[in-house]
Amino acid sequence: MTDKIDNEDLLTCEHCGKSFPGTEPHYAFSDGPWLCEEHAPSLSDAIAQHEQFLAYGENDPVDFDYETREDMEAALADMKADLDANGDRKLVWADEVAA
Ligand SMILES: [Zn+2]
Image 1 (cartoon, helix red, strand yellow):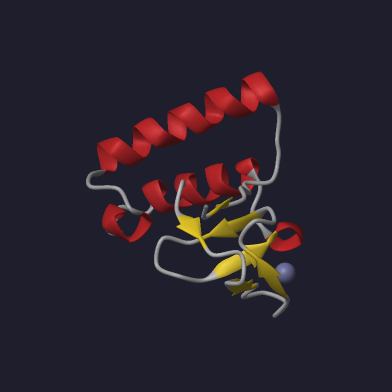
Image 2 (image 1 turned 90 degrees about the vertical axis):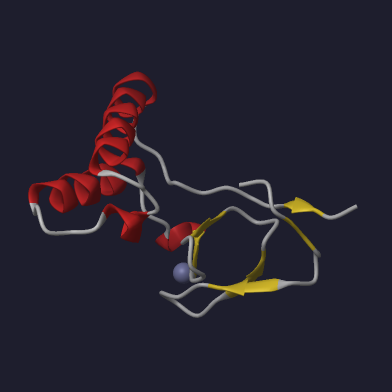
């Protein structure tokens, strides 16, 4: 994500209600809600979520921002390789401050 935002825009953690600037590490869902670093999912959480989703055949991958199940399976394989290579970590990033 490289969305540029104004520093004054505060995000709100959906889990704990904390407000924080987008320039702090956080997790963002594609359709809006945010999670602070403390409540962000980890890479292993995302892998488990993808595996559960793919194991249950009736889901629509579009809900996860994938066009096809094959795209989602490829992303899952990438995440597993990442976990093996780099270990588990929180899935967070910080927005750039608009110039
Ligand atoms: Zn939180």
